[in-house]
Amino acid sequence: DIQMTQSPSTLSASVGDRVTITCRASQSISSWLAWYQQKPGKAPKLLIYKASSLESGVPSRFSGSGSGTEFTLTISSLQPDDFATYYCQQYNSYPITFGQGTRLEIK
Amino acid sequence: EVQLVESGGGLVQPGRSLRLSCTASGFTFGDYAMSWVRQAPGKGLEWVGFIRSKAYGGTTEYAASVKGRFTISRDDSKSIAYLQMNSLKTEDTAVYYCTRQNYGSGSSDYWGQGTLVTVSS
Image (cartoon, rainbow over all chains, first blue to last red; front, top):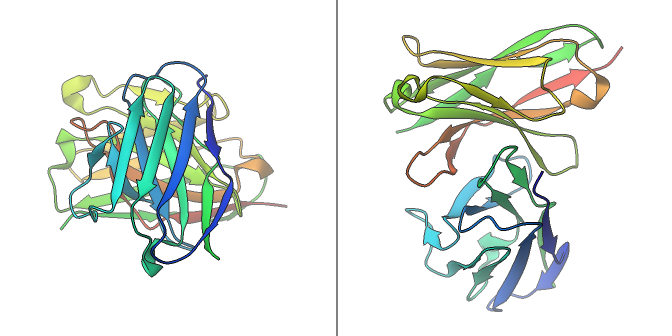
């Protein structure tokens, strides 16, 4: 199975900050990576697919990059609505696997 | 508007069975693969399994933790995906989400609101 490791596990930041979350795969997954945002008590929401493609309706302050084994999710200027937990997911091969999550909290 | 609504969750004893349903609307259900993802209380996301559309054989894939106990099926005439869960264990306690799998992007572009399954004696 492909292991997905996110860092950091928790990130404290302020409104207006630029933040980056990293996701590493235990083997190459090409660009078959997605990023999801989840708020407490809600279903996850797709932000980025194929490593760098922005899902329709997602604000342009979100961006993704990377290929192979190292990927990043960047939020260019944090907004109050962005404080949530973020998950990466690989879908290069079965079983599909998720990172353990990064909780983005208000500093 | 795309909607996915899960139902069938509840409290069940270890070793018993439960069937979850995911009723879809707002898109041509038969054209899409469907997945199930679960989240134990306070934990991260865990992929459960996946069923392809009939055009791709309608075949299934499962996580090792549920293979042989869980079965995913679909009824395209009713726009419903099912998750049959047998021999339930306490560690299967989770919110279960169904998702629409977008063949173009490969990712889960729509999620239901989830249904809670609690396995306890």
